[in-house]
Image (tube, rainbow over all chains, first blue to last red; front, side, top):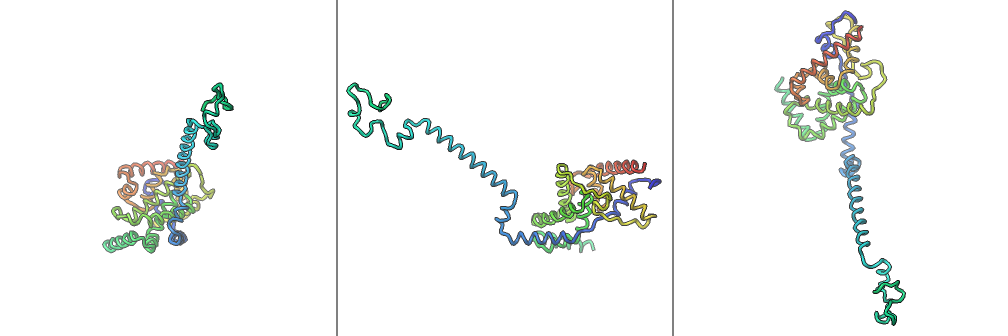
Length: 118
Length: 190
């Protein structure tokens, strides 16, 4: 190999002397992929695509954020509500079903209510 | 003859725009060797080169309806192959896969046809193998222009159109690549 001058012309000629031949199996694979695409409905192909995965992730994120907001708003409402959950469920206003006047003692204090007046 | 070839190409483009599968076969018959040569020279791996040609044909089928034929079918087809090769090379930075085949021709799936006017076919093959090894060490953008110019015989303006760069950039990349190849080959001889 020594003794040869590596000039641009020699390099160019040698480069042009090397080639690859197309593999016919490639075209057969392309045709079968196109046939498979035609056989599958579009939405099925979509489900298998990376776009579908990205869409699913985005929807999961959006629903997560929304549900977090709903839970936070609910907690805030519960904290600011004047009646407790037990009272609301028993429909208890502190009089135990008695008339308000009868529920008070002679001294004017309320019985069994921890000092909370209705 | 030239007019006939142009009308043929127009018909082929019209068929591609209509998503005719037979047109894809015709593209493969006309440009399959050039597509494979470009992909094999860029990726240096025949299996990956075939995968790129396969993906390129599918892209041609999918994007054919939007092709207006301004830059010629061959340029467009090779541009798709070059883009896919660049994507693969970028991904290879992270995966780093190249077959262990010691012969540069075998590794890339290329065949060498000795030049009849030159003496010594065996000597030519040894020189060509040294050249292939030197090409492997070129950066992808320089390897691309060398292959397009000298292996696929594209003009500077066609390469510029294909790569979407000014013609001067093509010439400077080519000059840098040839200088690097000469240096590599002289270094290998020592």
